[in-house]
Length: 398
Image (cartoon, rainbow, N blue to C red):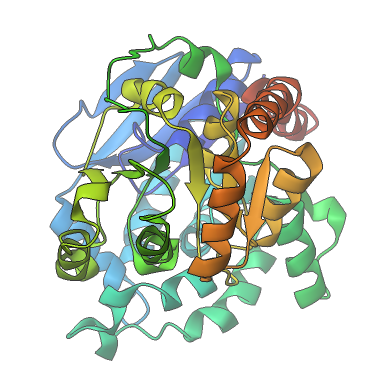
């Protein structure tokens, strides 16, 4: 039986993608060992759903400093190389599954002696993503972090790994077109699909929010300009006189670099009473908030990063039978059109978004039909039990 070593540079417990992958592998008879951080909230050693978790104690501040300056001073790479080598030896790891592009280098050097298999899991198009992180352009980070450098590093780091796990076929095809040394055989596609048993196991609270016979638009996740939140807020001003009691429900932390801008925006007297905002809610409450809503949103700005895959929220909205309105990023547009579970608007175009909201507002039957279509699609294919077979096959064939 294979010993699979999962390496992720966070505390693991709240990384939904990684948690689901580990659970899938463990439930299919593989021995799973996890190496991650401990910022002080957890035990350094524990067992979670049959997986042995080893945590490296470190302060979040020190981790962030080491990570921020890694392109100039490679202490972060050396740190991880040391801990990965110890991890491999301690648990007799047969194959390493490492998360995120920047972890490829320490993993590669840690697996050279003894030589073991090494696969890389890409959560995002990292070179594109770092260009959108506003904190990287602030002092002192902009003097040490060269975001454009990741374009060159990507090719080098993708060469290190045996297999590459990606979020979507779109992302896979983009990488194949970009680099001649890549082909389909090198990739495994595993989307950010939900665990049906977990999400459907939460009790629905139909009184969690008062509807007042109005229409509720819902978005949850990180709140920032790049996520298209201001496009939605701009559409509220246009729709205020057209849809009685229209509300926008937002759940999620605002990007720290945009906190002041966000606070000013949602407190605009023109739309303040139309917005319900919670910085955080437990995942167990998510199904209740989706069920009380009428239309669910994924308005992310179209760019190379957002073309890499589909967010968890898309499948979670679909599971609870809600119609979606999404921006025209290829992966999410593809699913919405194929499954007929929502409408697509032009990215960053609040007028087009308003038209799509009005279309669904005026047609309750269409909303119900799209909601049912979405749930059927998630139950039949967009879930961990079905999509997880690609991961299980990857490791049982080694």
